[in-house]
Image 1 (cartoon, rainbow, N blue to C red):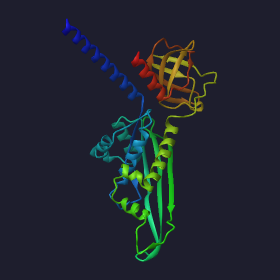
Image 2 (cartoon, rainbow, N blue to C red):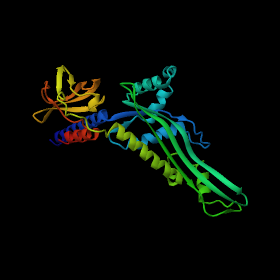
Image 3 (cartoon, one colour):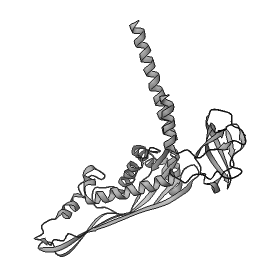
Image 4 (cartoon, rainbow, N blue to C red):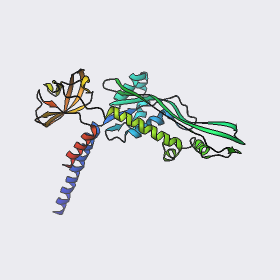
Amino acid sequence: MGTAKALLCIGVVAVLIAAASRAQEAVEDRALRIAIFDFEDEAGFQGKWELARDVPALLGKYLEREEAIAVVPRDSVEDVLGDKELKKFYGLTRDLQMGRRLGADLVITGIVEQFGVRRFTAGDPNFAGYKSYKSTIDLREIQLVRVATEEVIETVEVFRDSTERPLAMNLFGRPVKQDLEFRALFKVDFGSAPFFELAFGKLTDAAFKDLSAEIVQILINRPPIDLSGERAEVLAVEGDEVYLGIGNADGVEYGDLLPLLHLEEQVALVRVQEIIGSHLCKSWIVEKTGEVETGQRIGQRLSRNKLKDRTLRKKEQ
């Protein structure tokens, strides 16, 4: 009897683990999957940093703090970057091919124009002189490209600079705090804890927080869809295809997840697959709890964070 109970408990645990795994996969499937490729390095930092790879890798760490975003692991990106078959493509075409290979919804590219600290001196540095330190972060043409539609959603950039001028004269070449930090930049690992303790690391942190927040605002926290139009309803149903009376003029975009309502109750969840016109789009049913019929009202787009909360609640139930 004891053995039977033990086996039953093991079976129940296995079922719960499998259910949790499926729920987690559902959350990940609905997260916006982003691949960040190597940036063009125009800065040429003369230390051990590899800015073409280090900068996008760090951006990925900031973006993945947003629960609605899933950043493709850097190892996977490195694999497709080294794929010989994909090297015959160039520019945006290659980026899109790599994005499809990685199953990404969006790809991000950019240029590192400036990234580092420059030291300026006046007088004899070995006896008595003044120094100043100029920190600059200049990332340009950061393109957010939607893979399915092959369109550049937005191009953003970030620029931060800071100049430090120690008030005291440097007598007999004695190093000041800024000298020590300047030298440390050539030894410290990029993005490490010691890196962020330095003045330049703090500037980097502020710049990447602002940049990632702007990207999240563009991709996730968009203005609500205008559902006030007379045709803002289900216009036609063909199997799993549902045509809706909203389009680009109403603020709807490819990939939006929309609930369909009957008497204020959700009967289905659809994902926008094609923007056909200013007030027309085609969507696919991804979740269904009732019949989908013409004339049903469209609900406001669901944020990916709300979708995660709903999925977790279902798992708990």
